[in-house]
Length: 131
Image: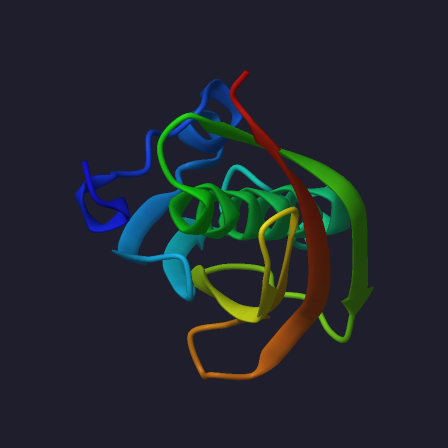
């Protein structure tokens, strides 16, 4: 099976968060997530929801890059929250920074319905090959 035959499978958290995949490859993953249901007590998109969304996108891209017989494990995640949202849908775009044999790094940009950047994240995943 080629890497292009792989399809992302949503986990329990992504399903609860309402994530929908629009595009998927090792170089780029695009998905959306509703703000409703992912807000904190003050009515703003929760920063933890943004971080979890970013981690999911970057990890999916890394496993699509790594291919069959592999697992990926996030070893570093950082996120800068530039602004928040109170409604609508956010879009996350994970773009490869470096795709290696043992490490894959992706930048994830999360934007609101007006295209304004809400969050910039970066994740590095360790690629674990099957024994």
